[in-house]
Image (cartoon, rainbow, N blue to C red):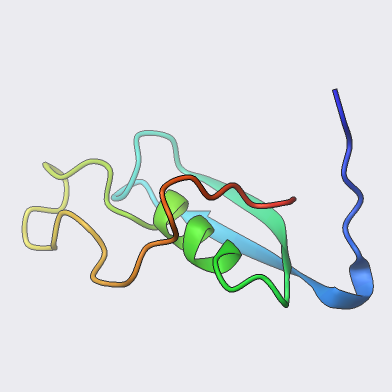
Length: 77
């Protein structure tokens, strides 16, 4: 197991509130996002803010209308 310590001078703490309308498990999650990583924020937005429970939100799109990070991308933190 490896632990990665963020570079706090070049990272931002981003917090996501996952509502019960979007997930079966509402919660608050925080991640450090490197300012020089163009895909990290997109990755977390797609991970947490995309509608996972479509039956609860029938009038919204099933997926986010935005660009997605590469399929093999994994954020550093």
